[in-house]
Length: 167
Image: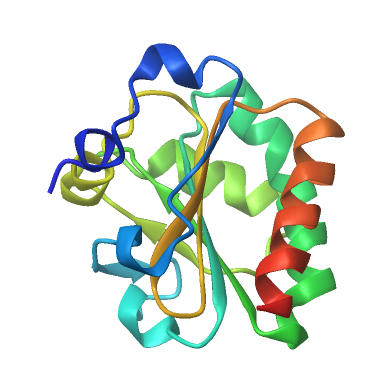
Protein backbone atom coordinates (compact mmCIF):
# COMPACT_ATOMS: atom_id res chain seq x y z
CA UNK A 1 0.00 0.00 0.00
CA UNK A 2 1.26 3.46 -0.78
CA UNK A 3 0.36 5.56 2.25
CA UNK A 4 0.80 9.01 0.72
CA UNK A 5 -1.30 8.05 -2.29
CA UNK A 6 -3.98 6.52 -0.08
CA UNK A 7 -4.05 9.68 1.99
CA UNK A 8 -4.06 11.96 -1.03
CA UNK A 9 -1.13 13.83 0.52
CA UNK A 10 1.94 14.97 -1.36
CA UNK A 11 5.30 15.75 0.16
CA UNK A 12 4.80 19.38 -0.79
CA UNK A 13 1.76 19.60 1.46
CA UNK A 14 3.82 18.21 4.34
CA UNK A 15 6.36 21.03 4.42
CA UNK A 16 4.79 22.34 7.61
CA UNK A 17 5.78 19.11 9.29
CA UNK A 18 2.44 17.66 10.32
CA UNK A 19 -0.47 16.15 8.49
CA UNK A 20 -3.76 15.02 9.89
CA UNK A 21 -4.78 11.63 8.66
CA UNK A 22 -8.41 10.61 8.10
CA UNK A 23 -10.51 10.60 11.24
CA UNK A 24 -13.86 9.30 9.98
CA UNK A 25 -14.24 5.55 10.50
CA UNK A 26 -14.90 4.89 6.82
CA UNK A 27 -11.74 6.82 5.84
CA UNK A 28 -9.34 5.31 8.38
CA UNK A 29 -6.19 3.74 7.03
CA UNK A 30 -4.78 0.76 8.91
CA UNK A 31 -1.13 1.11 9.84
CA UNK A 32 0.89 -1.41 7.83
CA UNK A 33 1.80 -4.23 10.19
CA UNK A 34 5.42 -5.20 10.67
CA UNK A 35 7.68 -7.29 12.84
CA UNK A 36 11.20 -6.06 13.59
CA UNK A 37 13.98 -7.21 15.88
CA UNK A 38 14.62 -4.94 18.85
CA UNK A 39 17.88 -3.86 20.43
CA UNK A 40 17.43 -6.53 23.09
CA UNK A 41 16.94 -9.23 20.43
CA UNK A 42 13.17 -9.64 20.75
CA UNK A 43 10.80 -9.51 17.79
CA UNK A 44 8.20 -6.78 18.17
CA UNK A 45 5.07 -6.80 16.04
CA UNK A 46 3.05 -3.62 15.58
CA UNK A 47 -0.31 -5.41 15.61
CA UNK A 48 0.51 -6.82 19.06
CA UNK A 49 0.42 -3.23 20.36
CA UNK A 50 -3.28 -2.91 19.45
CA UNK A 51 -5.19 -1.35 22.33
CA UNK A 52 -2.43 1.19 22.92
CA UNK A 53 -1.81 4.49 21.19
CA UNK A 54 1.47 3.89 19.35
CA UNK A 55 4.07 6.38 18.23
CA UNK A 56 6.43 5.06 15.53
CA UNK A 57 9.53 7.22 15.19
CA UNK A 58 11.81 6.51 12.21
CA UNK A 59 15.36 7.73 12.85
CA UNK A 60 19.03 7.33 11.93
CA UNK A 61 22.30 8.03 13.72
CA UNK A 62 23.48 10.29 10.86
CA UNK A 63 20.42 12.53 11.35
CA UNK A 64 21.17 15.43 13.70
CA UNK A 65 17.51 16.29 14.42
CA UNK A 66 16.83 12.58 15.16
CA UNK A 67 19.55 12.54 17.80
CA UNK A 68 18.34 15.85 19.23
CA UNK A 69 14.79 14.48 19.46
CA UNK A 70 15.68 11.20 21.21
CA UNK A 71 15.82 12.56 24.82
CA UNK A 72 12.46 14.30 24.28
CA UNK A 73 10.97 11.03 23.04
CA UNK A 74 12.25 9.30 26.16
CA UNK A 75 10.47 11.91 28.31
CA UNK A 76 7.24 11.37 26.37
CA UNK A 77 7.63 7.60 26.77
CA UNK A 78 8.13 7.95 30.53
CA UNK A 79 5.15 10.28 30.87
CA UNK A 80 2.58 8.18 28.98
CA UNK A 81 3.83 4.54 29.07
CA UNK A 82 1.50 3.57 31.92
CA UNK A 83 -1.54 5.18 30.30
CA UNK A 84 -1.90 2.93 27.23
CA UNK A 85 0.89 4.45 25.12
CA UNK A 86 3.74 2.68 23.34
CA UNK A 87 6.69 4.34 21.62
CA UNK A 88 8.67 2.40 19.01
CA UNK A 89 11.92 3.84 17.68
CA UNK A 90 12.71 2.39 14.24
CA UNK A 91 16.29 2.80 13.11
CA UNK A 92 16.60 2.69 9.30
CA UNK A 93 20.33 2.04 8.93
CA UNK A 94 21.76 -1.08 7.34
CA UNK A 95 24.97 -0.88 9.39
CA UNK A 96 23.95 -0.80 13.05
CA UNK A 97 27.37 0.09 14.48
CA UNK A 98 26.76 3.88 14.69
CA UNK A 99 23.19 3.49 15.95
CA UNK A 100 24.27 1.11 18.71
CA UNK A 101 27.17 3.41 19.65
CA UNK A 102 24.72 6.33 19.98
CA UNK A 103 22.29 4.23 22.03
CA UNK A 104 25.12 3.35 24.42
CA UNK A 105 25.49 7.09 25.17
CA UNK A 106 21.80 7.95 25.51
CA UNK A 107 19.41 6.44 28.02
CA UNK A 108 16.28 5.31 26.19
CA UNK A 109 13.97 2.74 27.68
CA UNK A 110 11.44 2.47 24.86
CA UNK A 111 11.96 -0.30 22.29
CA UNK A 112 14.45 0.45 19.52
CA UNK A 113 13.79 -1.65 16.41
CA UNK A 114 16.07 -2.18 13.43
CA UNK A 115 14.80 -1.97 9.85
CA UNK A 116 18.07 -3.06 8.22
CA UNK A 117 16.39 -4.03 4.92
CA UNK A 118 14.32 -0.80 4.84
CA UNK A 119 11.23 -2.86 4.09
CA UNK A 120 9.20 -1.13 6.81
CA UNK A 121 10.48 2.36 6.03
CA UNK A 122 9.63 1.77 2.37
CA UNK A 123 6.13 0.59 3.32
CA UNK A 124 5.68 3.77 5.37
CA UNK A 125 7.20 5.85 2.53
CA UNK A 126 9.84 7.47 4.71
CA UNK A 127 11.44 10.33 2.81
CA UNK A 128 12.55 12.64 5.64
CA UNK A 129 14.29 12.13 8.95
CA UNK A 130 12.92 11.94 11.50
CA UNK A 131 9.43 10.83 10.50
CA UNK A 132 6.89 9.99 13.17
CA UNK A 133 3.47 8.39 12.93
CA UNK A 134 0.78 8.19 15.59
CA UNK A 135 -1.42 5.11 15.46
CA UNK A 136 -4.71 4.93 17.36
CA UNK A 137 -5.81 2.11 19.67
CA UNK A 138 -7.52 0.36 16.73
CA UNK A 139 -4.34 0.29 14.65
CA UNK A 140 -5.20 3.16 12.30
CA UNK A 141 -2.77 5.84 11.13
CA UNK A 142 -3.87 9.15 12.62
CA UNK A 143 -0.99 11.64 12.45
CA UNK A 144 2.16 12.04 10.42
CA UNK A 145 5.05 14.32 11.40
CA UNK A 146 8.09 14.96 9.23
CA UNK A 147 11.12 16.64 10.74
CA UNK A 148 11.67 17.93 14.26
CA UNK A 149 11.32 21.34 15.89
CA UNK A 150 12.59 21.50 19.51
CA UNK A 151 9.84 22.25 22.04
CA UNK A 152 7.17 22.68 19.34
CA UNK A 153 7.26 19.02 18.30
CA UNK A 154 7.08 17.79 21.89
CA UNK A 155 4.11 20.03 22.63
CA UNK A 156 2.26 18.88 19.52
CA UNK A 157 3.09 15.21 20.18
CA UNK A 158 1.73 15.45 23.72
CA UNK A 159 -1.48 17.20 22.64
CA UNK A 160 -2.16 14.52 20.04
CA UNK A 161 -1.23 11.63 22.34
CA UNK A 162 -3.58 12.96 25.05
CA UNK A 163 -6.40 13.31 22.52
CA UNK A 164 -5.91 9.75 21.21
CA UNK A 165 -5.69 8.34 24.74
CA UNK A 166 -9.10 9.91 25.53
CA UNK A 167 -10.79 8.23 22.54
